[in-house]
Image (cartoon, rainbow, N blue to C red; front, top):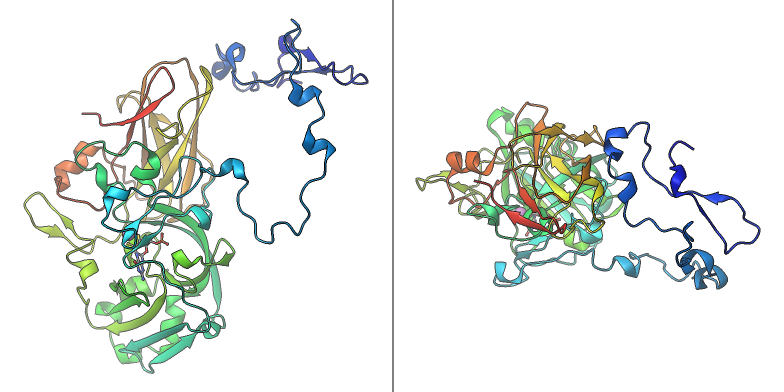
Length: 447
Ligand code: MTE
Ligand code: CO
């Protein structure tokens, strides 16, 4: 009974035979004394059947509703389910002015409305350079050629006969948060940070695929590379150093237990853990073992980072540690009034696991450590929570991640000092949300 609060005792009168007291829920005062101070009395949104003072009964409790008196859908109504209609606004969205055409464009994961860490495929961001193509398993071919003992072509069924693995990894486009370099621009975490998804992949190691073709012909593997390309018109070719290719790269054909969706590379895509999304080649058609990088379009004029002096960083593959508060945020304002508030968000690092996430309510002056809800993130999203008592005060909310290497997510100023403002890619700076007394939230920059 300790989780309930005696003074909020109410009685249900709609049910004649139920003369038991119905108690109003509040957080446990034992473990949460400080948390509760000032908030128990003001917990908003709690519905009671009929309060002791005799206000209106709640028909949702006292009246028999349609869903309780009629039958629901049969099991044949939805052979493959979609989210219920009440969740229809939790969808990918794009920013039409960002690109000339939706064929070579990007849309964004609604991270403000998701929880946990796994991204459902149906709302995981898409990035295509020449549109999402339809390629069947029976038409699928994967060629392995170049400096191999025996060039090979794999069918989809051939890949399924290699030893399979399952791993959860995040995929972040290098351009995620790219629009925010010069100043706060897009008013929603879906748009500032939504070029990310996190799925459980089933596939075979790239190592095992390469070993089938044999790497003796390649000689010393230290300075060798693989060039990977897709079957779509853009081909999206990228060079990957052999060391990474033999480490944790997957040739994946399932995501979150089911076949990859068309837009994520059905039937086969490359998964390059911790490295920029552009290297995760979809509709994977060819892997060539080479004695150097190709220096393709996607690794020279694109996906390099132009610095203040006009020179560019290249081979910036790893996505550095980053975090963001997903709620409250501009698309997820505080609507419940003062009292208990749960702050939550995501953190990730291409270097391994997230060790700590700190929260600031005052634009980075003071920091408190948030609670990580999962610790098994290796190049995968971690979810953090921070519970507080909010009394309508303005806040400049920030999250700051630290990964297993000890690297700490930089502020925007720190990042600009290093990289200037010409960059588009690899913006992993701390994000600031301005929470107003109304509960509304705005994207701002703290200087
Ligand atoms: N692979 C092919 N074949 N064609 C592409 O356009 N886009 C790349 C990469 N792989 C792309 C591709 C980019 S830039 C990113 S960020 C990721 O795929 C996005 O993967 P997603 O669409 O599954 O989110
Ligand atoms: Co990308």
